[in-house]
Structures are given as structure tokens and as C-alpha cells.
Length: 185
Image 1 (spheres, one colour):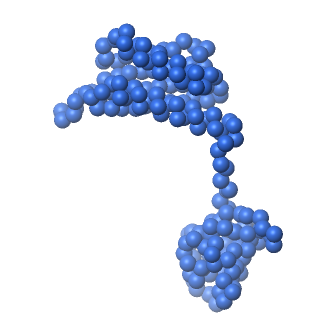
Image 2 (cartoon, rainbow, N blue to C red):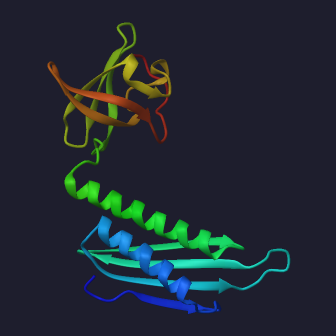
Image 3 (spheres, one colour):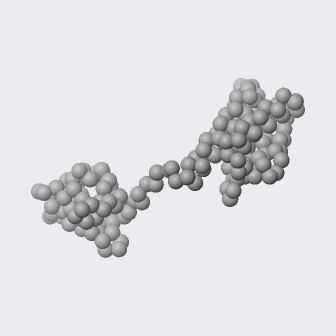
């Protein structure tokens, strides 16, 4: 780390064992992800509630290249469990960030908006036009909600674009907003 580990305790008695446990967990994070620029850990004993015992809160603030990760984890009665849970959550977020940088995260296709332009109820297909005027073919099997039979010309829809051999296709078609009155198809 470029900035030394900072540890703050609020309402918790300091001890060498506690400081060592925090340092050890922070070093494990640094071994896992070597580009941590700073790490601040705050342990606090939250206000006591009548029916509950002590509530421990662990707050971790990590700074990495161009990003900040903030974790808050609480546990009733056991500080070590709260500490372990907070550092596990920090590690998961570091893992997710590492996957994103490597490109291992699946990118979902963007959801597009359009309206039903034409329908052929007998054949079970239709066309959607988007804001740019592009036509997308869709079939009965591509309609998620409502059923294909309930769609009408002019119905606003959301869909996923997919290129097919015949042209652009709409997948996962879902109606949204007000549907126009039923028209002859």
C-alpha cells in the first residue's frame, strides 16, 4: 500500500490481538490485489438496544487505481464475525473488479425500445420499428409478456437486438406502457 493501513476504534478497547487480526486480513487483501493504494478500517460498537446485545460495525474504505470500495458490515455480539464478513465482502468486490479489468464479465445486450409495426397472427410473426426506423423481425416464441395474441399494432415494447442471417431480429420482446385499442391484424 502506498498509504499505511489506518485503524480506528470507537467504543472498543484496543488490543494487540485485534490490531494484528486487522493487519493480517489487510495484508491478505494486498496479496490478492496488489494495487491497493490505501486501506482504512473503522471498528465501532453501535448504540446498544434494549432487547439486543452489542452490535459491532466494521467499515472498510479501500482505494485502488481510480476507484474506491466501501464496505460496511455489522454483527450482533461478535466483533470477529463482523470483521471476517467485512473483509470477505471487500475481497469479493476486489475479485469482481479484477474480472471486469480482465474482460471476464459477460456483457449483456442493451435493451432497446420500439413499437409493434406489423403483425401476422396466422403465421405467428411480426415486425417492430425502433426510434431509428430500423425494422426487427420477431416470432411468437420471442414474446415474453404478454402473450403474442395480446399484442396489437402500435404496442410499445422493449427487446434485445440480435443479428440473424435474414436480418435484424428482436428477442425477449416485452410490452410496456399502454397498449393501443385492439385493431384488426
